[in-house]
Length: 279
Image (cartoon, rainbow, N blue to C red; front, side):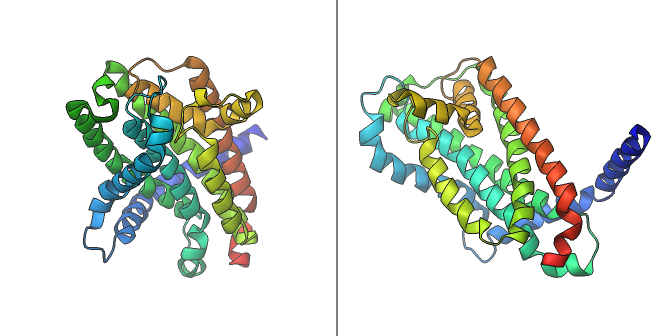
């Protein structure tokens, strides 16, 4: 039994290695198609998160950003959470509809089916990485001008660890995306349900407000259980606050991310062979 499992795992690795260049091409194709026929093109990766930050800062800055000892520069605080959350929602939504968007190719050409949701997630990660350049520019702007408490911003060597929560978020989004991509083939309504869930998640994760503003204990517990909270807080700890990441949050985020990815792979392998019959 173990020999068969080892052989199957080796076969899966060999197949992935064989099609890795295709995954790269699909990823780059998705990046290019996202901004096709737009005048600004890839520049929207800078402009879109920047405009979102400006609007949300104007609307909620007066409520959560003033006189709060738990927030250092509200626009940057908001931007850091918004960037990570946007990557999660956008990547999972595109992974969820990846089979329907590519059903003509799937029915004609054999390609490992996981290439489609993976390429959707990876292309959004490329856009997310580009958006980080916008985050750096915003951080520098508020630090230099001192606007909205920007003079309280400072950088430390711990900022180099920001790739850790980013990588964990990528693993978590991949696991969720694989599950949703299969479910959406069988239950088309899952697309609309997920829209509602992500809208609720936006307000259930401390993006607009610090966790310390919540005074109800059970609501705090619900927020802390959400792995997105751990990843966003870890990112803020090393980039915004300038101190070492909490090992408890890191351990929890790592376990949940790896577990979610494992469940996503197993669920995908279980149902992927039947996908073509339901497209």
